[in-house]
Length: 233
Picture (cartoon, rainbow, N blue to C red):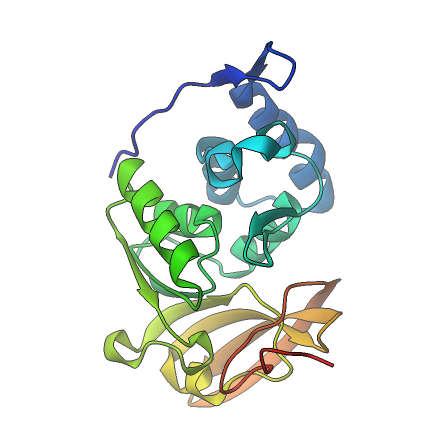
């Protein structure tokens, strides 16, 4: 798989040009490495994936800054560091079948596509799923399948998964995701209340689950049967 190369420089709001390749390099150097992102494959993926393509055009100049960005429909693209931390916690080696819950704009999906074998991604908002599907196809990520659905029930038809990544905050780990996690598999999921969570690394061995908290975080709520209701009080 060789994703199509896009232009590195695009017009800015002020009419000048931005060197996005340089911004990616600065992001890795100043935001990721100093915070402990040291997996060389992960760092290389974050150098390759053009984050500016996955945010609204009005926010492209902010694509590599150290905070989340809105992508519409009440959803966000995660802060680069948090996306990198979650990816590193998956311990990907290139042969894994991955389930992603929450496609969003498709940025994290693209990272996973570079680092794993096959990515199955579930997005509950049809408009976001369609945009991400078209963009990822255009960019040449041919090992990705995107589905519209309730991510809290996973995607049973392709289970089990070597890795599961949940990009929204859950109040508990959804039982279907535990069931669909393969033996020796790893799941990374934010767990907590609707406004603050702990990033958890969940492992399955001999059919038993163990989990460890990694870092405090804030994600949009995981909506669905085994998550939060649409309206959160």
